[in-house]
Length: 89
Image (cartoon, rainbow, N blue to C red; front, side, top):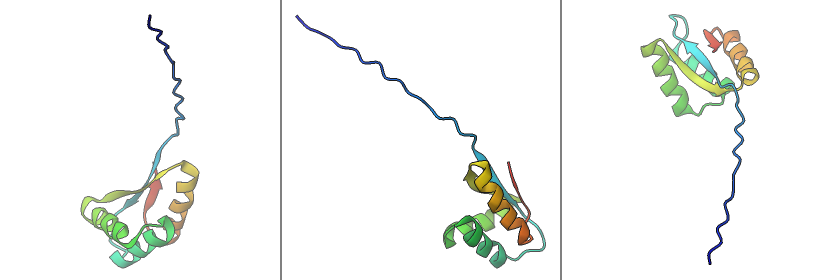
């Protein structure tokens, strides 16, 4: 005789609205300024900041950070204060 026990697992997913911080290309800021700003404001490492800056330059924009709106809003303000075009989507 065999006894089989079935376990029902409940999976609860916490849905968090994921937002993106987008930085746009312009003809004003230097590569170094954007790189330094991404390191300071967005806590990128040097390689990540350089790669994002290249994408911004050649593609016109780049998602530099994703996460919750409030956190990204502060970073966006920091970039805007440095003269860098950015928005949270």
